[in-house]
Length: 247
Ligand SMILES: Cc1cc2nc3c(=O)[nH]c(=O)nc-3n(C[C@H](O)[C@H](O)[C@H](O)COP(=O)(O)OP(=O)(O)OC[C@H]3O[C@@H](n4cnc5c(N)ncnc54)[C@H](O)[C@@H]3O)c2cc1C
Picture (cartoon, rainbow, N blue to C red):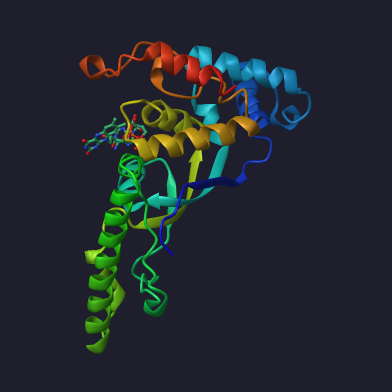
């Protein structure tokens, strides 16, 4: 237990995600019966169908392809942000059922995330942060013990003392349309660093499986003006060059 770092992988995805999206496009634009759909959408055509959908802004066929991610090494602070994405499905490790109780004899502390800006301050400050986590662990253990003495569900209330830094693990499913929207918002320099880092990792993973769908995935400024107005990071060119290297 202790400091954790981001880990993300695709657990499962729709089989042939680009083909299923292309089937949707083909059905919309061709006089074809459904029993003929799964013959004859060649892989070259899949890319063409997907590009056509994107150009037209006809995004609903992208909802047929979905991706499930296993994610750990993220904070409860990230959890609060990512769960705002309502078209996604989530399974999150529960602090009601899973204890953060320390193995005191080993001087352990619950898993937590260290923000890079604190890390950059150097060893002295990393140690202060670690000590603060240990203190919170003591408070958690105190409440857990006290509440369990009274025969209650200790974890349910002891967790109130845990910080936003506490690590969590989740399984997340999004369809391709929602993923593109998520990348628009969360790969942006204006998004908070932790969710941005996660979004970038997720984008790199889905690009391996569905390169045509996610070819232009990333912040909105890759394909149009910055939506942030006066709050713009002003680094559009830098951002575009960074994402060009993702392909
Ligand atoms: C840089 C940044 C800063 C932020 N700051 C704050 C903040 O200070 N405070 C705060 O509370 N949140 C903040 N947020 C979160 C933000 O307001 C959204 O809740 C979050 O980004 C999810 O976006 P969404 O609603 O578009 O996504 P989703 O929930 O994934 O929805 C996708 C799309 O579906 C449609 N949709 C979904 N549900 C509905 C509905 N009920 N009615 C109509 N259309 C719907 C919309 O078109 C929506 O864009 C911030 C987000 C970012 C990226």
